[in-house]
Length: 163
Image 1 (cartoon, helix red, strand yellow):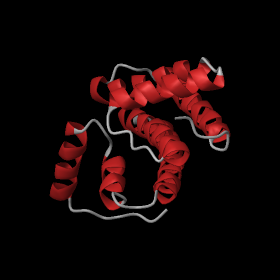
Image 2 (cartoon, one colour):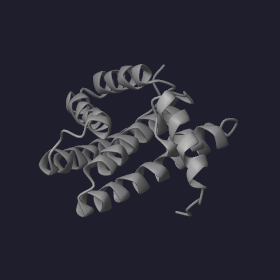
Image 3 (tube, rainbow, N blue to C red):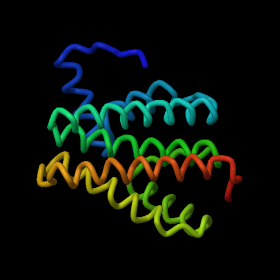
Image 4 (tube, rainbow, N blue to C red):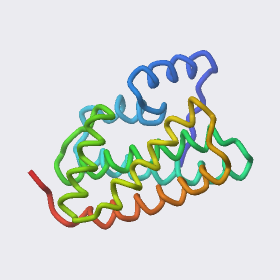
């Protein structure tokens, strides 16, 4: 995936804007760039970014940077959920509450309560990014959970739209 180089002051501002919206910088940039794009294009971009964030989370965990790994784990999960909503329904999930509601909806539809547990594990990493309380084991477990969450969401891609 190409890398965008942004001056530190601009990145700080992007981080502030993203945090104010409860999202990662990558997600904010994708939302801005893909605002008027076709839902299929948005979905594919979100899937690609989610997979990249998951790989970067593994690298950060390997370096022992638990907060950065946590942020990327959370970002991967959030983007994967948003990708599925775009793909199946052309729906933009704009808040944490909408993502929680959507995960509950797809878990009910699929008869898969594990989706809710895996999602809770992912959201704990969003908290850990700010608080820094999780151990390396917690972060590693969450990484595994988000990998499982993303795999299950990918299985749901072709199972039809609800609504």
